[in-house]
Length: 105
Image 1 (cartoon, helix red, strand yellow):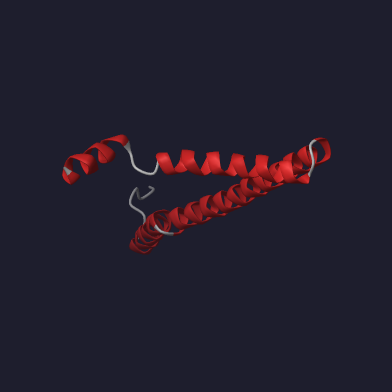
Image 2: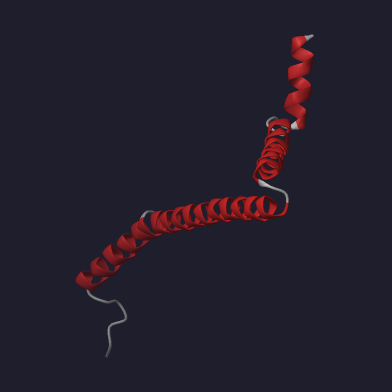
């Protein structure tokens, strides 16, 4: 005749294992996911910045060869000014920009 209830020591061991598993899922697994995401984001950001840098260097070299160095400086400077103006114009969301103009009046 087999007893359907496991001994108390086995039940306590199972309970402790369940608690430890839940704590690990709530803390360590989430932290590991966050750290992995942060590392991938930093690598992607660095790769993107390097791609932009080398793109500007390539544009400068091509323009320097075709038009001269002074013109290349002017064109690359214009590209950077236009990019800065685009970013500057989008520094506030549209709703907040409307609120800011109504507060100033």
